[in-house]
Figure 1: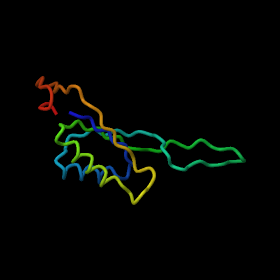
Figure 2 (figure 1 turned 30 degrees about the vertical axis):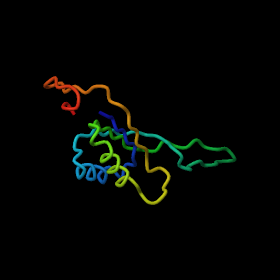
Figure 3 (figure 1 turned 180 degrees about the vertical axis):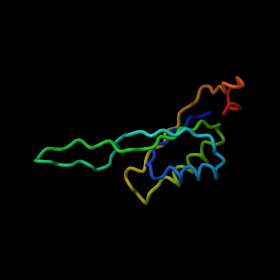
Figure 4 (figure 1 turned 135 degrees about the vertical axis):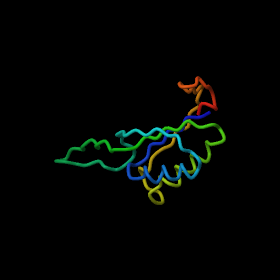
Length: 113
């Protein structure tokens, strides 16, 4: 089992959700966050560099069984991209998931996902 965390731009949320549904991934959690990556938003005001503002982003978390890792990543990458080589399209993090427990039924492991 893996936990896939994707940080994407706000305007791509609906596109990514549709792509995930097409890939048979329907259980996701979405959070609104703020952050700053390598975007070149550095302003100079009266000779001083101004710290870049935090940019609104979307954080998607998806717990998947091992068979769904690649289809999930591929769906996010293809649908979250704005163009060729755009800085700021986002990141995807894949981390091992030790355990998953469904509270209602006490199912554990891959069947709980």
